[in-house]
Length: 623
Image 1: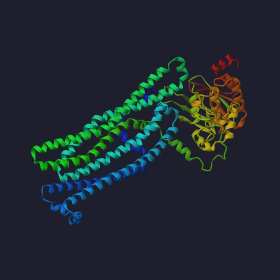
Image 2: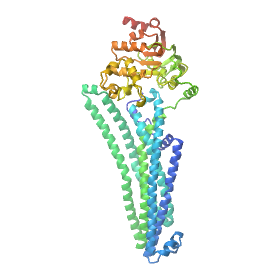
Image 3: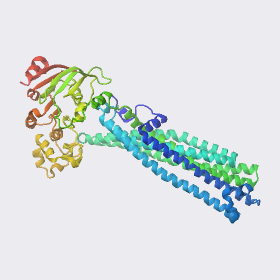
Image 4: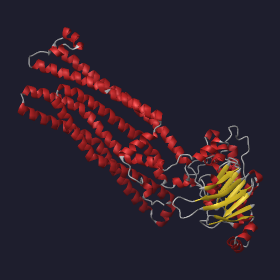
């Protein structure tokens, strides 16, 4: 079993390349195609940058020529788009018009990029929604064993923050890195034609600055993102524990201990978040300083080696090239850091999905064999058959169930008994379809439990020993997960009556709208169990499985509930995991387990005769 600390973090380090590959694998083929098209369009807008820089270069060349008194160069005057300007304007107007065109192109590029960024974000939001829906479906289809590998809070953050990081943050960061890289390459291609030496110096200079920033801040961003994610999971778990054990910790005087631990973890998380925010801002300031220092170095070098006029032109070119490169380099570094900081959160989602299996081929084949015309018009079967069923938990020392076989007739009341660790809960989970047997088969009628549920939703019902109640109304808890507009209040009241909660309901001013509080905090233990029983009875099941579901009831209420359920007679097969032999004595059929094996079955008296330990327990209780 994983330790508590292991429940809070991913179990292996995910390289950024693996996270990026896994993130794009979460998107479906249509979303990946749309992503590529938008990135291609964004990269194409770099041509507008290219045209803008070319025009600015022409302006600089023209102004430089005018400043030296030589007039506009013949090659500039000979360009096709300059003919109308040369005929109607002087040199100053000529330069002004070119500068305006350059500004229009650069502004247009920014506007188009903003619109495309909006389109990208909307596209990724839709893709994230669809990917999250698929992930949630796989999570809900997983077995309790598969979900128990991690804490509920780890799973929660993986499906929320983790999926957001994997399907939005990582792809959007990659998109920015691609488009800015293309923009820089196009800028380099043009600037090299104007002045290759200054261009190469500027690019080499800014590339070194960007690499240094990424090397310096990248590891910090990764560690801070990982620490913040782990701290979020741990603090959420501690808050849940503190609320769940509030009565005990208050009585024991330990509430301050929880407070100190939660404060320490939240402080650590906030510090890491502050580091991430600082990292996001640093590239901008570093690039601004780099541009100023680069300009000073270029100016100083040129003044020592060339004339002031040449120095001015080259310096202006460096500043313009740097001012166009700098935003791209800033976004490039910021996106790389954003991807690093999101890496840990995205890894939680990828690891969760890596450990959640897709529906088995066997289940898909069985589903394919279900007749299309079979529906609710045909009564849901209630007979249950186990045929040589064996099951071993992964990593366990032995089999939890070993060659278990029995038949339960429709309408029977069956009790499953055995000491702790005998395999009762495993048998129930296999019967419900939550665990798939390693060998043998389980059939309800002629269908596997999963297909029985698919054909007749709600006709196989389960009441756990510890009932979880959602923090809503009694109606919401009985008609669990059903659209409020489709809830049948009459069926809710009928289920509550069978569960012996009708008197309690009559005493409540709000009736079915009575709020039960988080996990039923406003109800007694017995009332919570009866709400769970009413939840199972709401859908009129043909098979009802109870795992010590009446353990919190007083003797009279338990007897009343048992009588009400027995009154359903042949309408319902009832299987109960029982420790109270008084309950077992009323069963039509008893199944006795010991260390995963079925050691006896039959009536109460037959099992007592077959299994001495059971007979001794009955004798001590006077049964």
